[in-house]
Image (cartoon, rainbow, N blue to C red; front, side, top):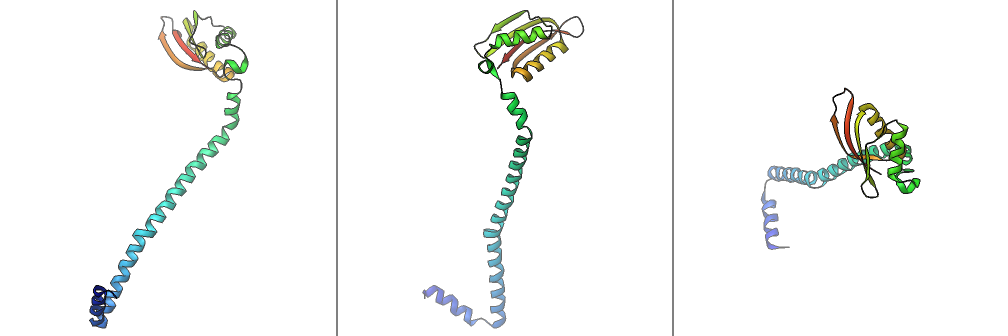
Length: 162
């Protein structure tokens, strides 16, 4: 045995039974504390964190499954390549169907178009934007709306992207 260890064992042997019992109890107590704080507590915390992460992921999965049909439906036919029609044509026809005449249509590259309206009913404009988003998958990238003198009418510039 190592000399230092032998020295401690000899000192332990010289203690009275009552002191040895107290030292054994204290050693057991500190051993249990070390076991708890070094092993049990970190393992338990990891388990709880994993359970919380699983619950978050399960919630996300349920949300995705719930909205899967809507997402798949909105991704079908999105963009000019999927329908074979240009974005400019889709927007122009949608405006005509809603009875709105744009003042100006201008392509912004192959995936965007700018539209200017003056004196258009706000409700009609919002209806048009909602319709082209739902039916054609075209969404508003940027919008600028100014109020006109006549109640309910606006002057606007909209940039739409497929």
